[in-house]
Image (cartoon, rainbow, N blue to C red; front, side, top):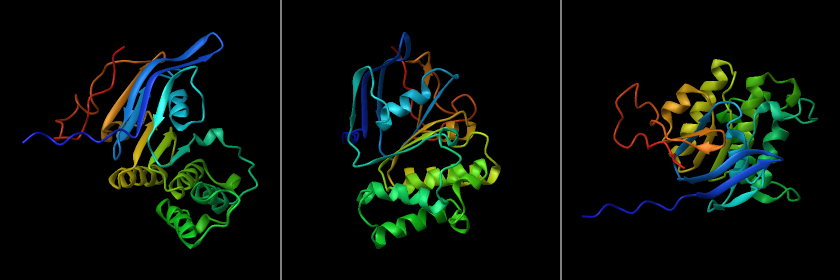
Length: 238
């Protein structure tokens, strides 16, 4: 009996190039993102990781190439350092912004939308802090609030830029758990990270070097035996 066909990718990136003046941040990137998979983008600082996730999120237009997004909706969670500390918003306000992606910013949230906000706050253990000003939070709490915003959108493509960098153990554990839950329910999760645990848990590891995809080993390949179907090959080659 022939194997079942692979599902269509949620994202197809073809020939992606991004130039900042005379600097080429991405050069000919080809990438498919699968539903229900954790794709982790790794590489040295300045290799183009954040630029790539911004392109996939639709937050940055490539200089050349094309991105086909087949997801119904997508949510982008930036690094907490990219978000102003003095936003005059409470934690709940920040998470509600994610729910606007479900209904539009000019419409009132319905019962299901408010329930999605409550559930996102609960999953990231932010319920008791929901009336706290965003700027009064610790770094780990801010990152949890931003991820809760992404979860409240209910997207089937979730893009995260360094979600666990320099976090306390509690915040990191909550974010790891939320990522695992999202992939388990079929969400395509793309994550820029140096986090060894996320890299080891990845289905696909994408390694960038000076804006190009380069070949490498699958996540955890040299450290431990690979469980059947646990990891895919690193995407690479020119």
